[in-house]
Image: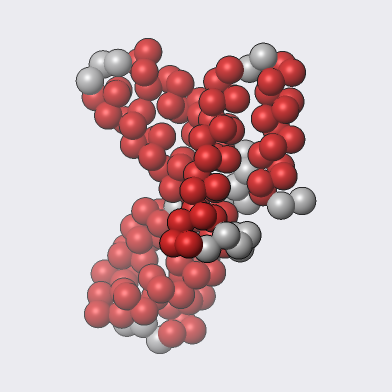
Length: 150
């Protein structure tokens, strides 16, 4: 089932359950998908990779907003943002653990023959491709930096 269909089904379920928070998050996702599909004059369906990137972007926006609200001691605004991020994350593929990501990065470094920080771009490019949707870019970058600097 395509992401858009999954979202529509989830919206219907949230409406029946009268879950306003979930409904708001899902409507935001559906809106973002429709905007992405129609932007630039194209009206084609998105690829799975594009859908994952879009969902990751939406989750990151909400987490960043929640962090800002927490810094300003506004838990009343941070909590709904965090809850929406959790709802959106349910549509993302299973995230790898840090140790699994570390193992894959070690393999990539060996494969590419990377030896120092000058090879970070090469390793990051391949790691980001292989781990798209399975790990956050921040985690990947931190681990690559650690491995190449030691």
